[in-house]
Length: 276
Image (cartoon, rainbow, N blue to C red):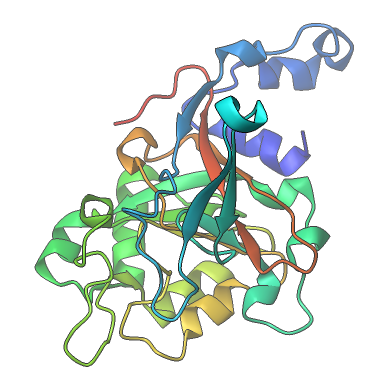
């Protein structure tokens, strides 16, 4: 485990209580890990991809599933899947918005395993679907929970999951404009400039994008998708992700020159960490 991540884990509520001991006694630590891997708890942060429920971003290709083999006929069961790379729960690679940045097949495993914090804006998003998280919101969160660790995945919990599978998820107005909450541009610049999402962190959300839906220039996305930062989008089950102390593990097919991937995303909870 890299030293940066080791330090983070040791500093959050004593999650890895053995690490300080290991630092003092490296020889013994090699044979006595601080905890067993089967003590980790995994929570699913992904929607099931179902053509009857999956809301597509306006203009993306339609998502279809077609049964092409059955056990009675062919001896096995198989579906043909047609979808965009960002259908349903997914992650976006840096090259999704920035020419010359890494694409899905150029990422390292460490780019997709990150410490996570969850910021609950459900009340503000319910009152204003165009709500943009501010620097003051982030600082208020830190006064309560502590500094966002460098290189984090900063996840917005907007409550939009409850709209999944209905027209209120994209929340289009009569002009076809999306109305969903997200980060303000100054807030994301602050997260970047202070190192909180660093070179290898990112943002997550249960909506289509880290941008507010009315932001048609995707400025927030362009900022997030620099260097080796990623965006996790259309997350599910965020009630199971603790406010602090968990990590996110992102999986999905690595398409050649992929803009990201449809994904199964897990929250990884060390021993002693529970959802709020």
